[in-house]
Image 1 (spheres, rainbow, N blue to C red):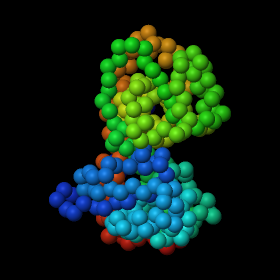
Image 2 (spheres, rainbow, N blue to C red; image 1 turned 90 degrees about the horizontal axis):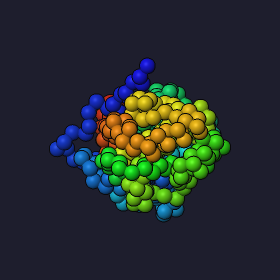
Image 3 (cartoon, helix red, strand yellow; image 1 turned 180 degrees about the horizontal axis):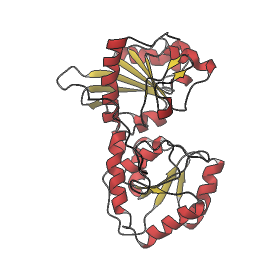
Image 4 (cartoon, helix red, strand yellow; image 1 turned 30 degrees about the vertical axis):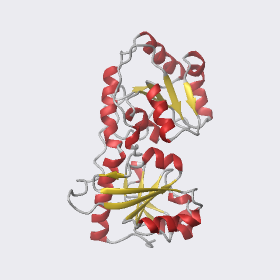
Length: 307
């Protein structure tokens, strides 16, 4: 049974010809570099504000100077309450780790709308409010590249902090297939360069049972062949059509060995995966979400302050 494609984030993008929406994105480096649209795109003027530079008590002044219509806060639960309450424009919070705890309800009450990366939370009540909708983790436009032809032994890489499950799944491939494991510290131009040097991306969730992080879309967008453990949720990706499923350390080694002998064996899978990655492109995804945000708040008012 094939996974169903994720519904569009909205019915239409923001209208051409209207004044562009000024959007400030506030978050940590890993999110700003990996998930935010370029500075200027159709219907949007974008400003990135790094949460740790300036310090939290200085971000409000920086964002006020920009004068956004919408402030998108990626991982709002880590932002001090007084800072969150002072941000200008509509406030769109993006939950990156599931539902907040009861102790974090105040942060949710400071937002006009909340989105999540987990479809199971779409429309669900959470402490301090509700989840307006769910979207897949966006992928920065800068990380997209064309699918390249392979003529030699493909080089494989994986990105993510070390965990017990990841080490169990990756250890044999790291020794037998020279799999590169990037634990942290690579973003921006360095990440783009690294993705261009590798042909295969391996995704293993933090724990047994499956997951779906921004790295999934990143590997596909870069034109790499994706080898992935169970994707939960699948966000529209079809197993062994858009990516190759792996369920054991031996299975990962087997796929990499086969690619070493037949580099172009899964070229069609790479092409399909790259096409599917367009649904995660940040400029497209945020263009639709922001179009709906403005219309929804205009029609139904803000959720800010509602319990």
